Image (cartoon, rainbow, N blue to C red; front, side, top):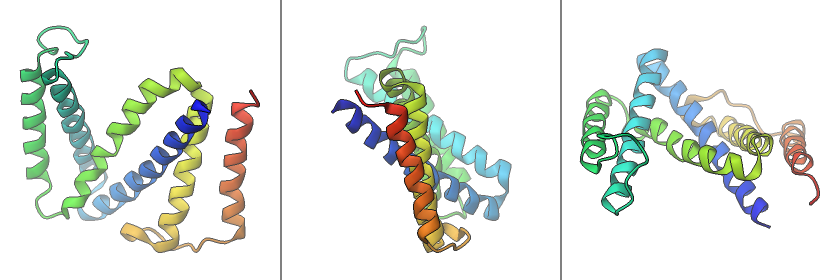
Length: 172
């Protein structure tokens, strides 16, 4: 039963990764591809360092070499990267900052769950979620994606990936 919960979590993360791709595309149209990637990476850095700083303040220091294990340093990096992200976002809708933050749960889950459920199962569930999320985003043309209505063939494609996840997991 635990595998099923973790698989559902990973499929959900795949959907957020589809959203990240759509956000990157929207930012690309506003600023360019390298600039969109830069904003995304800075958002990821801000989110991860904030998570480490909060964890450190709660008494669980990161298992990093000194001085990177100190909450004050990770907090300062979070503050600096968050400030830079805010400055870079000028002229863009604020929601575009989510592009980097969507990577944070993915990275945390990959490092925690892939060893638990297996890399193949993790990737299968992630890709199924990405494709399902992508099909939904395309159906509605969210964030300027090409509008492609959901049809039986696309549903069959997503279903085939979900069946693949079941087969990769096996029957245990």
